[in-house]
Length: 107
Picture 1 (tube, one colour):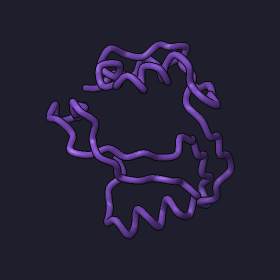
Picture 2 (tube, rainbow, N blue to C red):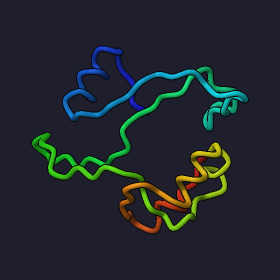
Picture 3 (tube, helix red, strand yellow):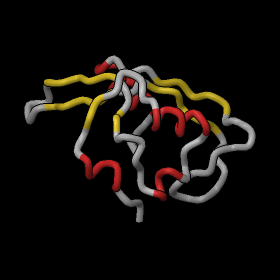
């Protein structure tokens, strides 16, 4: 949900060493969870969690996918493609978060 100019977003992600690249959407196209319309492209990116202190300094970097024991709210599960469902069950380089993350609802 990050917004800004392409140059500003590039500077931010470059600062943290985050990889991202716009790629064509699959067929059939995934559906945007917010608008309900088919997506026209996708973005491959680094999977990581960054903890930034009040001074703006990176304190923790944990690369990988969240491990939520395969549990996800129905609203979030509906937007996963085949690879997303596979990652949900078998996350690579997994990190654990609060149990409440797996039940977050989209309103």
